[in-house]
Length: 492
Image 1: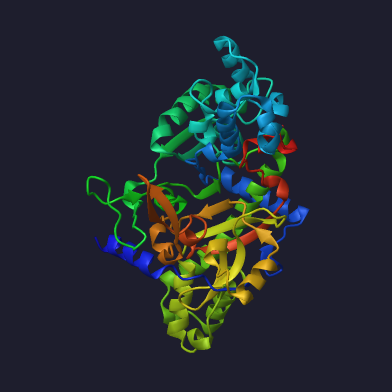
Image 2 (image 1 turned 90 degrees about the vertical axis):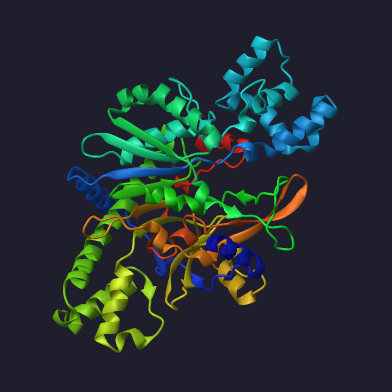
């Protein structure tokens, strides 16, 4: 009940904006790896895997595909009202879909459905058979189960591409590849069915053993909805309405997993085999950066956690302080932490005893999304954070000036270390910032309401992690936001 009351209070007060100090850039918080460094980090990761570390690939895959087809839904509605291809002249996206239809990986299957039904080869049918139950029903499926890429041996869904990709960098020294997908309840059976159908095929082709597990966003993480006066929204039967709280709730799912290194990547950011090279190399390189940093981090953790303050020299504490500030990118609020040895010890111990993540960052070329910034934390320290535009005050000219100078954005390319120096898992729910959620307007049964989302998985939900940013090339970022994105060279 206290959680619900706190959520209602969030609606009334609103969430505070995050105070950004400056954009992170190369030499100012973003690491740029030379070709030699990339190879060295890859080699380090491969050696650690040979020595027994256990990797896992975590893929948020609950996203519905319906938003991919917004233009096609609009075109279908228009065609049903006014038949004839001329309707498409004002819908450029739908016109492109029809003009380049045969390039899509799903085209042959769709045409076969149409032929079996004796349906005319018309624009209306090519859209209707794609979106609705009469055909492929893509308008009601998750992205992970759509045919994205064409191959001679059979076309692949994003789910299958993640299996193949995972075999290249997330296999352990026994040839096991563990993947975890977070899915919507209504689609879990579809994912499990596809995995059972394809598992043996890809295991034979890639010489690995796959273990794919699935979980759903936990109902306990749902947040209460309110009306426009901030009173709890009630369903027609009088019950309170709770809604899924966004991908930030997935920190609970991640917290349930067991692994030494966790790779995180969205379901729609995949490419065919011919384009996978850069992704594989940089995934391994990011893991190498993580493991190299972790070695020193664990050494200092052990010293500060197992030795008494008396046994630690001021020189050693100064060394650890330098690591925290210059490697982990945590700038102390002021010199007060350093006036007393006991205060410094406690401060450093707290900052070291946190999960670690290495985040790939892409040069900004106009893509929407969050980015890497130096931001002020509740304890007045300044650290690297992944910040969404909604977290920054749009009316503050000074803050917006910092945003305009940003050089990189967040492609959701993370490698995470979720254990301490003893090999004990952290409770990841203890490292979130509850004050970084946001509020949006929705509707239900024709009534407007306000919904509340938890802090995003890679921003607020990981706000109190130790964070490193590494520049990765744009070719590692190929999301599919609309169906016509599949016509880009990277996906053909």
